[in-house]
Amino acid sequence: MTTAAKLLAQKQQLLERLQQDPGPNERAEIERLLDQIDTALNLLDEAGSTGSGEEPEK
Image (cartoon, rainbow, N blue to C red; front, side, top):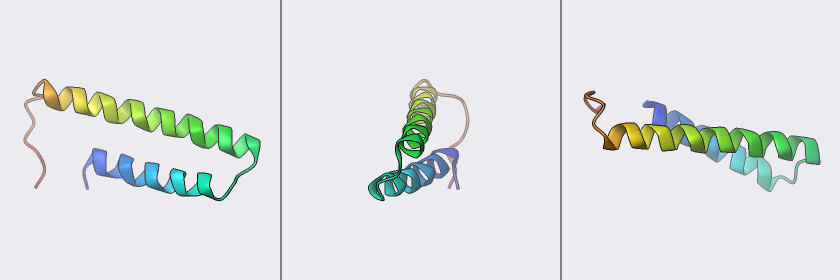
């Protein structure tokens, strides 16, 4: 599984937890983690679009 796929799977799990109406502290933590995942995905996207020199996983 690629890094991007792992991040997307984590993001999906966190979004599902948000739908379960968590308390305010848990909601804040989930939103913080979602921001981190989005940042990581954006960095991966930028690295891929500039040609990191790595072969894509098959």
